Image (cartoon, rainbow, N blue to C red; front, side):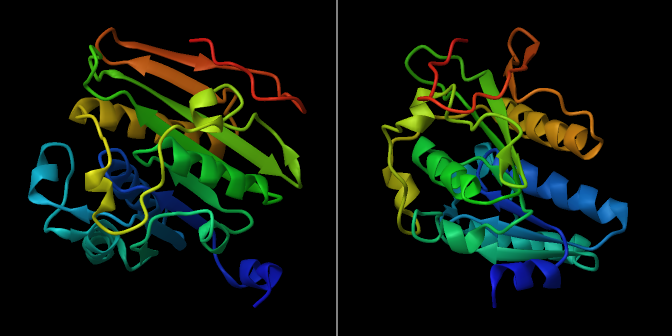
Length: 251
């Protein structure tokens, strides 16, 4: 089926990539919100990792197993009469991102690595119309408190950027030093700093708050920085840079 035909044949789609500490909150609250609206929607839940008992300190889940399958099952029981949740128990890679994303999608991206963020951004840049919300936070390591986080918005419509790509002001995303996991359970072998539950929740809230502002036609920022330790939350408003290399980020 051609892409245009697929789009005409489906309802609004939401794609949630990364279902860990942040993504679990995003998926649960997004599905509940969509269900409360009374309109039908499709939510794609993608993650190649598994829930393990050691994850319970910062993740909500009823049983162990593939994150996408476990969460899709739990949410289908509560909201499946209106919202279709499609589990994709695979990591997003450069090979499959084109199969996952489609024209007009609303994408939430919150993986544990910058390499996946870059792949998802590039997949969105190839679409004519898409809205991407990306979020993350510092881990508790190397003297960091784990209380800082941020989220970025990237929007395209009719082949034009309405905001800057998320990598433009973030060289760590433009040139990621980490790598994409490529098999179930592989994420556990990658270096991952401990995360604070409350920071993860704040990242999810910032992403969903920006989504709500976008839906209401009131979104006038493309990034938000916050620190739950100081209570600061700062929006960043920027003009769209049409060409040139990614700019260096200044906090």
